[in-house]
Length: 319
Image 1 (cartoon, one colour):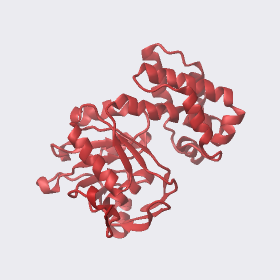
Image 2 (cartoon, rainbow, N blue to C red):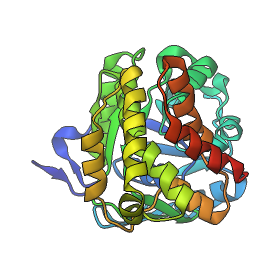
Image 3 (cartoon, helix red, strand yellow):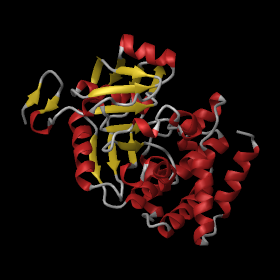
Image 4 (cartoon, rainbow, N blue to C red):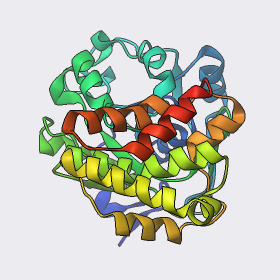
């Protein structure tokens, strides 16, 4: 397959440049911003004044075993400006903040600044955010995404990409398929292998089914995955089974044995992002993950005693 040596993009995947805004250029958002910019798209990062100034002046530096070391030029601003014409309108906004910062971050994304065709693409944990974003920005423009990657912002504009992969699942039941396909093509051409899935609930619950037991138990015990899956195997198994039952009731996948087998393949030192937040004293995405799980269970009449206890104990810690 021919390759564009300037961008590293396969020639038959290149397309007309898009204008992409990234709300929250941290580990995930910064990596995507840099890759999209390197592929020739115009990227506008939305961040606080100091971070925006750093990104405008120095770009985003990426260190990645998969993509190499490079610096990508991006624009940056405190909020999305209102476009004065079609040439300035954004094609998509990637929402890559944590749930705990979402409400404040959305102030940087006024609805009036979005053009008629702009997609809002949340890369958020949990399953409840699409409804909230649709109420704010419109039903047919929100396209939830799930990303599999290990990427960390070590300083403003500095990204360490540790995993040997970046994989994206893109969904959005009310969004016209051709718009999803165009964005997926842009992601894939920039580096992340991207597929469009036909069932939004299934895509979100597939991630939730894996994330919730992992995040809740590693955070509760302050242990890496390897110790959780050996010292607390019965509890992990019960929580996986409860989460799978809720997922099934919500239209998602349910295969507890497969989930446990997948945990067993991960490095024993692996920690969840919620655990890292707890160790750093940052607010936890407990409500977006554990709270959402319990609310879905209650709606569908699914008994989840282990999940309820774990969420209750974490909530009692006051974060």
